[in-house]
Length: 240
Image (cartoon, rainbow, N blue to C red; front, side, top):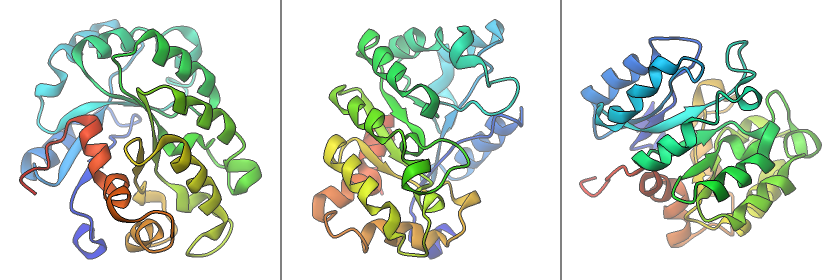
């Protein structure tokens, strides 16, 4: 499927509802090191797991951490203090952190200020879960754009086709994409798909960016379509 879509590499986000998902992703990265990297996770509410971060990036393909908050166990983490300990540790160890932070975007700015050496990325352009359209999906867009002033905050433009209210080429989301690009620039805006839940083809997820956005061209397009994200997480693609 990746070959058919013209996708050379993929960063895997293991699902938090499966306790074995990190290991499954590691096996994929071990088998195909030039094609898969990983943004994994730990149980933030289990102190015994904190020691895992000391050797986190020594695991095959493991480049960083990614947390989202949708199941009963993780839903309270942003507010109950369980999330807070990870930031100084990740900053010290040079581990990038991705957050599904739609519900607390202003706090991301506070975290970025307290930990200037920490690389933070906001998943899905800050779109709340189960929303579509400008008034639903992009109702926090101004809060997201306000984060652009922090040089250690970036944006993942993942899953955007799924928030459109129209068919391909999804013109209803082009303005939001353009606003985020103008704010963060090509080196802090990352293309992605969340392909397992998209209603369109993987190829359309690619061409939405490569063919349908007239303002995204040349070197800027190369950055957005992979080089910037690989640089952000430290995935060397020099041999590709």
